[in-house]
Image (cartoon, rainbow, N blue to C red):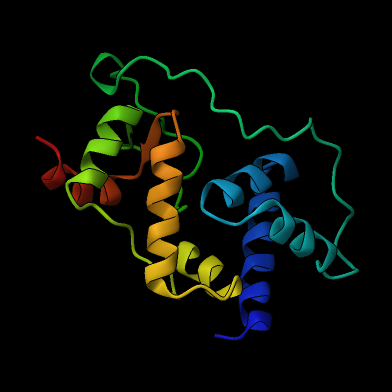
Length: 165
């Protein structure tokens, strides 16, 4: 996939998120959490088509981890809004919140997301010129550094369960 194709797909992703009411700050934070660096995100915003509305004001973006909320076991009200932290689909009913420590355990046991160029993560990796192996290494490093809980859609939740004790 060419950088241009990757940019077009990411532009589409941004526009879909905006249409659903997500702020530009939240979209940028999601892209960065999925492995796209600050410089790449800034370049992406600069390359948005001219006919798109200018970026809405948003609070300063902080990469500092948020305090981890209560564990998933104590939260029967798992998130039903927002997007999956792995595949970016709408969470909906059946979504589950995995504590950071539990998610890291699953990654240590071999859980990996889809990194094909058809996935959001794979698309971002291709846009940054990374191979699938490089993207996987980068993703694992991001998970290790992240102290926040992970909200997963039912499909990604089913994929991670076999990797948990």
